[in-house]
Length: 74
Image 1 (cartoon, rainbow, N blue to C red):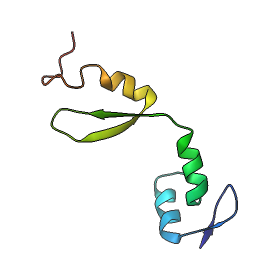
Image 2: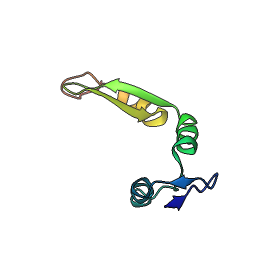
Image 3: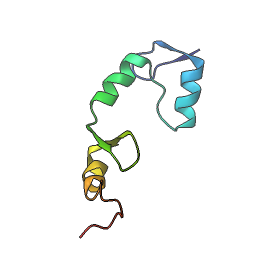
Image 4: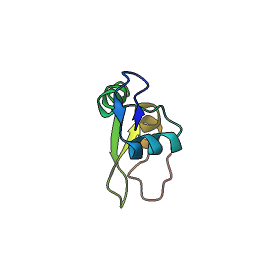
C-alpha cells in the first residue's frame, strides 16, 4: 500500500499505480475529490456522441460550432 501525498492515508495499490502512470500525485479518494472539485468542468454533447466533460478553458473553445455537423464555424 502507498500513502496519500496530502494527508498520509493508505491508498489502494491499483489506484496508486494508475495515478503514477497518469503522472499525477498519489492521493486518497477524499483528497482527490477535493482537488477535482477545485477545477470547473463544462459538459458538452457533441454530434453523434454522448456527453463529454471538458475543463472550462477548453470547453469554451470546443462549444463554438459543437453541434455543427460539418465542423465549419463562420
